[in-house]
Structures are given as C-alpha cells and as structure tokens.
Length: 155
Image 1 (tube, helix red, strand yellow):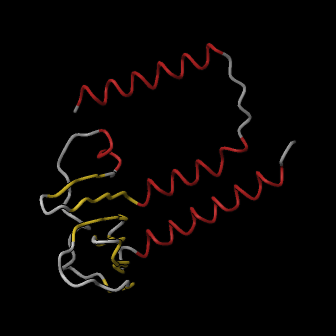
Image 2 (cartoon, helix red, strand yellow; image 1 turned 90 degrees about the horizontal axis):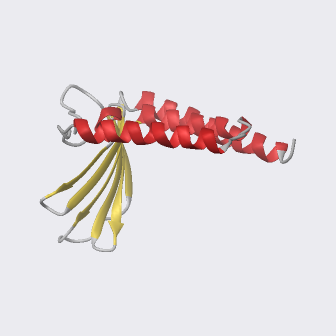
Image 3 (cartoon, one colour; image 1 turned 30 degrees about the vertical axis):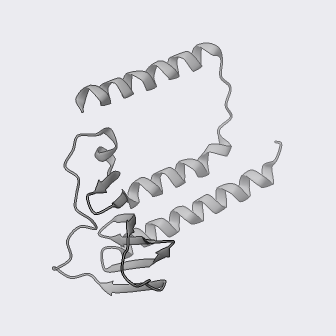
C-alpha cells in the first residue's frame, strides 16, 4: 500500500468537508447566510438559502461597499435564492443553474446535496484500485457519450 497515510489524510479532509456541507445545508433552511464585497468594480456575493448555495457577480456603479458577512432568520417571506431557471438543460436536473441577467449580473447556483455527494465521492476515490483495460475504457466512454447524447436530445 503505497502512500497510505496520504490517502487517509485526503479522505478524512474530504469527509470533514462533506460533513460541513451537510451542516450548512441544514442551517440554510433556518438561516440566510450572506458574504458580500467588492472585487474591482463588481460586487461578489456568496449566499446560502433553502438548500442552495449561490455565487453571484454583478457590476456596481455606486459608492464601494465594504466586505460583510450577515445572517438572518428565514421566515415565510423568503423566496428561493435567486430566480429559478425554467429550462430543460441537463445540469438543471440536479439543481445547477448558471444564468446571465440583463443588468450585467452573472449567477451560479448549486444545491447542497450535489456538493455533498461530490465531496463524498472524492473522499472515496483514493480507495478504489483502478485496473482498466482498453475494452473497459471504450465501454465507459461509450456510456458517457450515450448519456450526453440523451441529455442533448431532451434539451
């Protein structure tokens, strides 16, 4: 077992990150956490609300704003994080949205469960012993091409 300690450390760090994402996911249903500040002439915003994590960047022509972190209790008046995108793109099925608004605002929204799932998969990856042959690689590539083809055909 080569690099066993490195694999253990990597898996533990990814597992802790996954647990923190799950905790933040649960918190997002009772609190609206917001980090906002200026990056050049644009406002950078990271926000979590109702199971979603959003990152936004938009132009700002007024006086510069200071970096701030805020948290407020979620009640019935809170809607979704940003306007939901009503499209049939493949990534919107798992809750990933990327949209550009007319006022020069770009946003990226992803649901916490997708982030936690990816983090858990990355934590498990070092323990899989990969032994591929050319045939296995070709079968895998064919399956990926079929899934992508179906996703494009349905959009």
